[in-house]
Length: 562
Image (cartoon, rainbow, N blue to C red; front, side, top):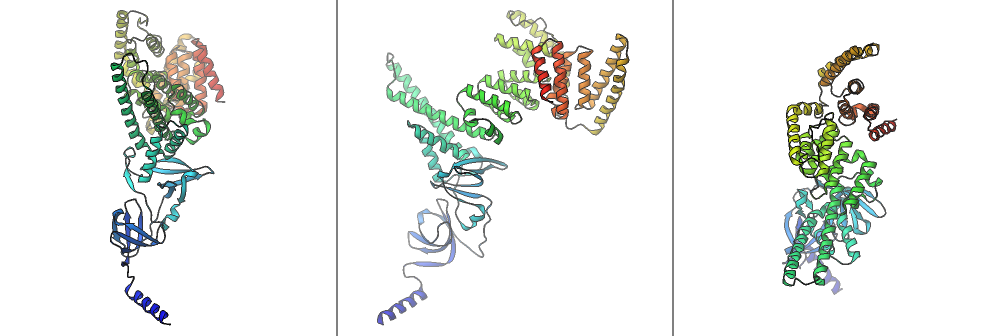
């Protein structure tokens, strides 16, 4: 009875005064921790630490926190509004947290979408074994937990990179120098799965590895200068060389894969085997093979990847030339013009030829300059292209001639361009930039000229003498050219003009230029039927000029469009 009375008295005192082991708050506080967490609840101060009784949060119950781990504390005043989250939270098994949108899940992987910059997003893939839990946006209001933001230089804005994430990245980077194949595979997979989050750290690591390699190279030179008869470097040096070069190669491959991920479409990924690793391969032949497959199987999606390899500084000239030629075949003339204006050396020369083959003669000065270089193969190619663009003109230039003779011929070529260059460039660029901005009045003028030309075309079969025929053909060509000046995208006009030029006037190069416009600049306006007719007439021209290989190719293309 006495024990029961004492217990009731103590319990009453406790209710009136609160706990005897510290001062507890009656207000709610929001506590920001240095590791990125945000906790809400009632605080109890205990000197060098505090206790938080959580009212809601990622961790339920009473939590002990050291004061040195606290960033700041603020009182929650008034009604606490429930935050609306738009993104899911991915919590990985090693403590990393990523704000994202979960795109798809399968038995082995989870693919999420992260925002890099405004209107620029990327997809990152994680293995199921890497993931602890996923908190979806609709459920995140139940959890007051966030990641710490640190600057990631390559992303141009604050990227969610927690200390645990950085530690995991550094661990994987350290494993790139491992001699164990299992470690290398694991590190490569982890860094690839982290995608854009790992990129700035990989770049920094790559820079340090290059410095290490240079230091070893310097040591090697010093060692060999002291012992010139030393047949081989000591094993330790050779081993370090191997590991560092291995780390550099893997780092470059991972960075390369992250770059091409932005350009590869889902259809490409489905159609082409191992596309990422092959595009980022250190072997030029492997890169070349996969680019050929991309152009063959996914031509519509190919231009961005072709442009990437053209602009890539350390890409070999042969692959750049291949990519430029493919852009020409695909009719990407605006892209080629941009490349031509920015490029130099072999890239500029290749772009000039690709444009010339599409009937755009902007790059002829570059091809003329190529007549003076030392490489005989390039001189031969340059004069061959100039002849094809100018109805066989060559001004006495022979690529095998001594420099003095070649110089005289080159001067004639430059004088010719000075006299005709402006007109040729203007006519070949007609409609390239402004083809979709033709005023209605201009279109109507072009249609009127076309109607006048049609009246004359109907009279052409009835003409009896060659002289009358020539006069009438000249009149029709004049009307058609006037129609094109007003309405450059008029497909019927261009087809009829090209036909008259090669059938009656034997002006094959002009006809080829007009027909190639229908396959490049105006392929959308031409449609399948217009493109089929263009290929057919090109086949006729090449047959007349005895270029049988090209003629067969054009006839095959025409048949494919049925």
